[in-house]
Length: 350
Image 1 (cartoon, one colour):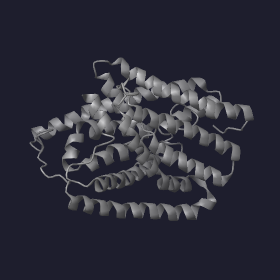
Image 2 (cartoon, rainbow, N blue to C red):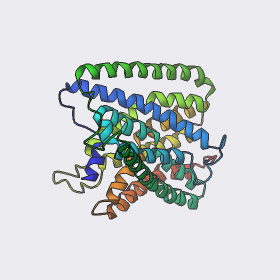
Image 3 (spheres, one colour):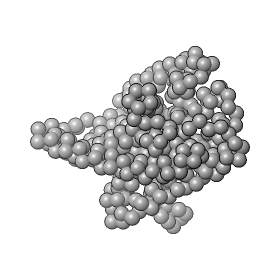
């Protein structure tokens, strides 16, 4: 049951009382806006903890640049994707999807994690790559546990203060599920999305000729929502299993497909970037990697599913799921990125 709830947070059936077109349109607008916010937060965390400020992360060790965002996103998933998801759904189910699938899914990135380990491997730092996966998995797993425990403590405090009486007895009675309220919220978010895309487009145009991380970021904001939408639709395969018999239903094939495919495309783009090696190509490729591929893959949902499996009657499934995701992504990455780089002798600055 716990695992089924985690699977369902990605993809929801249309809300009763809403036209299907309005339900899906509103949901996709929510996902786009919160997805861009997730991209911006991930960039800020990279800069904050990276070599330029705190110096806690870098590209040369297993403490990779996206580790802080993966840990923060997994921690927050414990709050908003596990403990308080029902309370948020009392207000708006679209908001719950937007926060967990849109924001937290885009704040965290599995493809970026996998690619950093590939870059360490291609330069001969195999031990760092192995430690990067082991330490990263350990920290992510405990981040969501810490998030769940602190959220439960906060809920207990709220109950003591009589602010809320928990799931099912929340003080919140209203729900934004009418056509009028959904249209109003969607119009508001469309305006925000228009501003975000407008500003991003203008900044890409002004900074593209100079290249650099700023141009890559704003290009990422333009394409990021596409990755969120694809991941959201792929999530319908979670819990269905393989074939008509539904084999291996315990494997969330939607999330697995999103993470593995994003990791593979990320590796292919990295190979293309090394082969072309021009400033314009670097800007476009890095923008797609950070935005579209970063949003298509997710660590927060992966962590939630891993934690749910750990707490189920078959805890071994958690280790099997993590091993399949990491090994398949890394193995394919070796074929797509490392072998061409070694064969062509590209000069890798890692």
